[in-house]
Image (cartoon, rainbow, N blue to C red; front, side, top):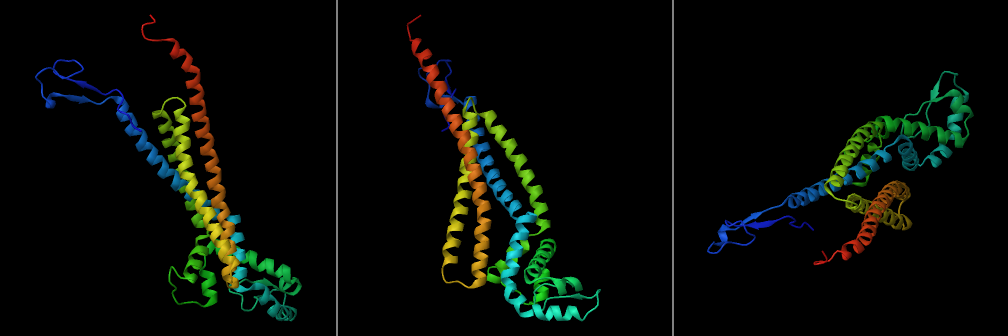
Length: 306
């Protein structure tokens, strides 16, 4: 709480109480510097909290759109959307027959696969089903990470617009967000927000006194991190319940993908929660220890002892 430390009443007579015969309007309230310090502390703390929340969201999205995480997600998404195992079983012999009767410079594509993935004559003729599956998924993930979902839509022949909040629209938007371009943008944003959080954290610590500096910074970090951790846990728990119910194959696969991505949210939330808790406990603990040490010294000095 903000206390009006240093405030005092002044009157025309200069004493601590109103002079005789003066009215209430003659009383002047002088606000001490601690009042403005408290205002500044709360203002900086709220700004720090907002910037830290934005940083946690930006950091999480930056990690989700990283090349490794994105390509793993895209691989699994393409496998689910194309039902690649069924597709390969149905068209594998046809692919090998076409490759066997073609020249070494010809290229081939697996029929009905939703992306145009060219295969050399040697790849089409000699690759096993597992090798063909990995090859198609790896190249599909690379194309979609660089270009988004445009190749997938064009190859599927879907020219009709879908609603942004429909299942197809959410899938399209989610997969389209896993791109290197957005990862680079989020990298700049995350770095900027991190620098801003450092400035606000140092400012908050400067405005506080003693071990309250650690406790105040830790409290803000803890307050910002707990909602993120709870949101990740809640989302993962919900998706797990839904995926265990009687859902379609594609829905179940995407729910399991979401559960994997939710771990990134949970991990970041828990990491910052622990960091904030350490700062808070150390700050409060050291302050209590200092007060306990100083208590005998103050109790020894009593009024009238000098």
